[in-house]
Amino acid sequence: MADPASTALVAAGAAIRTAMAVGVVSLCVALLLLLVAAAVRCWRARTARRDERARRRWLPVFLAAVHGRGDPPGTMPARERTAAVEVWNHLMSTVSGDGGRRLRQCGQDLGLAGSSRRKLARGRSRARLGAVVALGHLGDRPSWDRLVVLLDDANSGIRIDAARALVRIDGTEAVGLLLPRFLDSERWYRSAAVSVLGEADPARVGPALDAGIAAAPPAGRRQLARILGGLRSPAALAGVRRLMTEAGDDHELLSACLDALAGCGEPADAAVVRPLLDHPAWFVRLKAVTAIGRLGGPEDLGPLNRLLSDREWWVRYRSAQAVSSIAGLGADELERLRLAHPDPFARDAVAQVLAESEGAAA
Amino acid sequence: MPAAAIATTTDTTALPVPSKPASGLIRRRVLVVEDDRVTAELLRYVLTEEGWRVHVASTGSEALRVMRSVSPPALVLTDLLVPQVGGFELVRAVRATPGWADVPVVLLTAHWSRACESDALRAGADAAYAKPFDPDELLAAVRRLVEHGRG
Image (cartoon, rainbow over all chains, first blue to last red):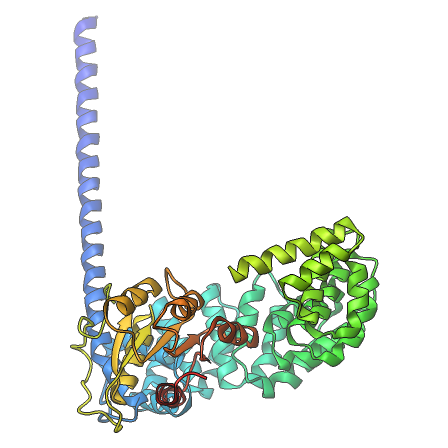
């Protein structure tokens, strides 16, 4: 029979050996992680230095091209291409007119179209993103199909930049492709859709927007109206008017259309807005008041004065803003209006607008 | 761009230095307020090429500091969304400061709209341009505002 003390000693020795082994392994893993972290840090620093060198080398070349000065750009080494393309893209987004055309030509001369097509096919994500943007700036029609595929990419940044590139290549055709996708508000946020469509030439995409709206299912029209509202462009006006006539009892669609009209409507549109000042849904009245504040005239002051006593605070407040905006009232006139109004709730709404105008003046 | 980045401190080693002013104008100073490095270099380049001396500030408060410590520039060209003191606030500060009220201010913005333009003019700016902008058009506006003054 084994001595209990020696058994315990053997067990303790085994435990100590195990603990030591675990400790050594942990130390090795920690050292390995440290080495990897140091390597990643070195690699990132090296990449940053290389990118900075590329930017310092190519920015002057691009600036000279914008100004129509400088020699032909020569060739761009592959290792400098990602950073240089980013600088070129940035400048292309900043410069228009002859300078922009000269810069685009400089990009063509450097062969950015071919290299960007290759990066698009098998580059890393940063290089791919730069390639997508560059192909849009270059108006590279051969990349169209590849860019269309990227509209369904898992990376939202790639999706949005691909959409923007397509709009730059052919706005009219791109709008037809994009509008059905923009109805999926989970995948395409309204702000992204608005920013993409904002790239399009309003004079050319108006009919495409109108056709897209006509083809949209009823369920998607609210989302489209919200996008058109954000666009605040004359190109959206025909579509908004069409949606407005088709809204019927859809209060949310009406509200979105009124929002859009407030942004891009014309004084003539006030005629379709006026009947909605008495709409039973308070949020429709609210949007109607806001739209009348932008599109209306002195004939709307009577109904707006009445809405200063609306049962909803927001409607009273927007009515006070609309009255102030249409009549071009200064602080003294607003104060007179406030004092003269028999309804204390209306006086409160006017006082709020008065305080804001005094705050802005201060 | 380092703090207090005026022309003398801006790193220009990578950029070609224009040989001579392109116009017959006496070189005068334009204060560019822009936090984006590439856009700041673009503005510096096109203005310098046309014979202007350019000071670059990367924030609104730095621009005000430069205007107080040096003499007021012939013109201020500012982005709308610059850190610390925004474009509108900068315009209002220029208009409200004795001795600076006649300095023309041009606003640049990537988020242009008619409302934005009217807000800019109401704040006291003399012109507002959307990005992307045409450098030739911008240079013509700068020249016109400096030669003929505000209004």
